[in-house]
Length: 358
Image 1 (cartoon, rainbow, N blue to C red):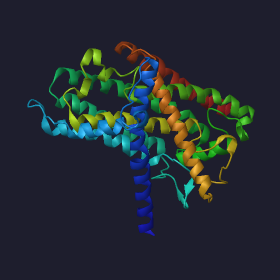
Image 2 (image 1 turned 90 degrees about the horizontal axis):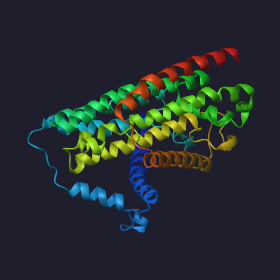
Image 3 (image 1 turned 90 degrees about the vertical axis):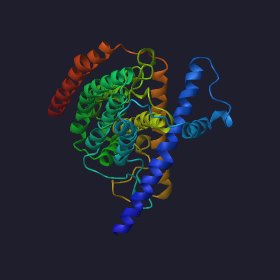
Image 4 (image 1 turned 180 degrees about the horizontal axis):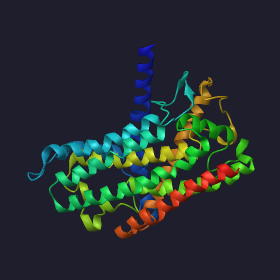
């Protein structure tokens, strides 16, 4: 039995991380370049493969073949450690995301923990150490400034990010992401309560704090993943390239992959918490319970639904990046501490009052 559990876990890790998440990183890079080209009235990558689809593969090969140059003035051990500390936590957080219902009798989640969101935030917060180390170990002023900016930015927005999911936990009474998704599958998605108990007066009223949570969560996720309009740690106009200025070859590629992997995992968490995860609209093909058996083709449809929602959210990330200007640093800090923190705290109190009243 122990061997079966280990084999099932290994298959899910290989399937979700190496056959889904990493290829999705490559496709996200391609999509970003094509979308930005369309917005700026350019063509974008169109030479390597049909529609330029293999451009990301060509870029990966280029990074592998480039000289791995380590400047003489850097602190070598930490300089080498930083890219791994940025990439690995981004991949570890996907362990608790339910990317489907069941397939071959196995739950489509690598680790079905009862503290899913807490695990994600705990591991994701380690990413900041990689960025800080990269800035400090480079022994150069621009990377150092990028590292300092990243530290204050990520710590500032982690508070509002954590507080934004408290109303959801209060409403669903559970920290297990699989059970939260199943509850949404039966009674309407958190943001779209259009069937089951979600159609009640209570369901519609509770949509108000959930909508506030969604706005805070999504905006904080932009800041956490250092994406425009919050990419202050690596803004090219002020800091050359920010914390990875001194990096080249695969070490630079790891920072690049880490940013996109964090964006994909953030999109997956948003879909899981607010848009019903793997569930289909109107409770279609929803299993009777989280542990009920699921027909094979139902399981495939659930996995497809999950990744379709994640891809849609990634496209939203990309469009926002290429349509909004960058915030000034003081505006970024004011938004995090003066607005989001207070609104998230008020939202928790509002949810408690509504649950008591209803």
